[in-house]
Image 1 (spheres, rainbow, N blue to C red):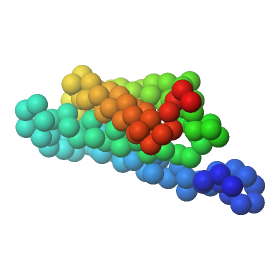
Image 2 (cartoon, helix red, strand yellow):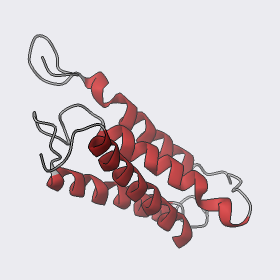
Image 3 (cartoon, rainbow, N blue to C red):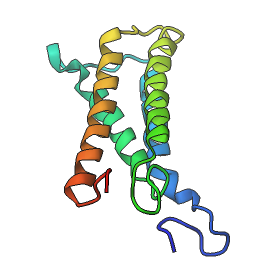
Length: 136
């Protein structure tokens, strides 16, 4: 039986999706909070953004059998769509900050995209290292 699948229906259990959904909710709530949240000083200011979006992508990519097939080959189109959706969340959050009178910064969005990209690259590298090559 596939990991994360319900014994009765063959569908994935909702708990399988809990980690990325909880991280997504945390990102949105934390980012749109109507009170200022202190940033790290200087060039480290984007680190929390990169880490949060990397965690979101990593947990989403590791939902069993969603982004890879039964032979553990990646579904490139799904990975691409997930990457675009995560970047859209980052852009939407930055735009939404104007509604709650917080500063939207392009640097924060760039940090989001860096985290997203890093997670995808590390995920792909880890699969290859573990012998689950994308081309085999």
